[in-house]
Image (tube, rainbow, N blue to C red; front, side, top):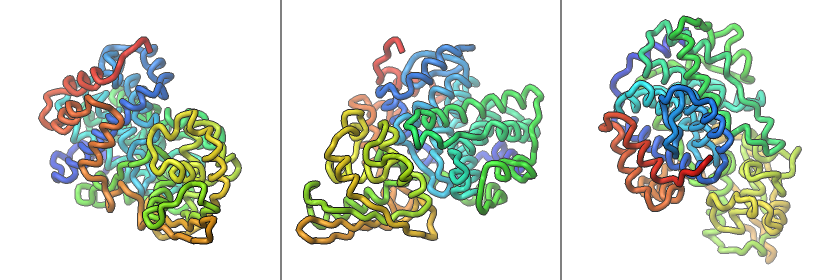
Length: 454
């Protein structure tokens, strides 16, 4: 059974190639930076408030605070914090935000059991492999059913991380994965409303995975057929072709941890290739926003179903989060601003008439591709009022494994999220393998934020 094979590998693996370790540290660093920015924005305040209220034994720290609550409660808050601004990483094959479910479980349970930095890093890599492989076994299959793949797959990675750090055996861990399957979900209904549920999904997944491991440790059982079926997660929640066997194919030989991309823009990953194509067009002709007569973007069909859904107003988004999931609005913003930062999605910014007017001039052509949506080519045709036509294109968006951000670019993103205190956090996280516990990292993160009465 796949769950048993995954559990056996996840508990038993002790060595990881150095590039895999380095990749995991980069993603954990990016996740911490995103969580600090999310904390300062207030976007995760409801989850933090609820986590504080849940309380429990002081096992784990809510990122950005000195508050210690139960590990499941901390994971709820921290998963929401990492994903709060949709600036966190994406595995293209599974279209999942991997760190948003890996970091909260690894850090919360790692703190709970007093694990070393090395133990936490190894558990995190196991989690990265699980979430990416499970989601990629149904390419766009969960999204096609109206479900958020990050939450569907994230409950399993969190359960596996918690099982490993808590010392569960293979039988218990298999049960934990089976139990986690009954907590997989995450509706995409937020797309049409601007609701904040998407930010909560990684928190739900991380919390649920930890609870699944605790239930298995206490003697609860789950179906070891959770991946194989019948009535498993793919049968119930995915559409289209699936390949569950790929979850355990070449474990320890092919590392998906090195195939996760880091976002340069705080918007839905499925818009990034178009945004980069617009930048490529502008490098040819430095046009002004008022010069633009029309833009035609060629978009992967799976991307279009998420970020070009005309059942909602794509030119005047209902909320900052809705703007992040409107390709026309995001493209218009990058035409006007020439770049995209967290400030692009402030409430005052998304109400700008100029951006809405340009967004209305952007049309979409579907461009089927053999590549998955998050790794597809980007191409735009920009028509200027003087009659000139400019084609901008990129083979894939920046930040992915085949076009990665440099360490300097990653550090610049981190500093943009964190501010002047970024150097000491970077140093602490990049030395994770040598840390006796997470105490130093959590302390420097808390000192970086301004704690109030939230």
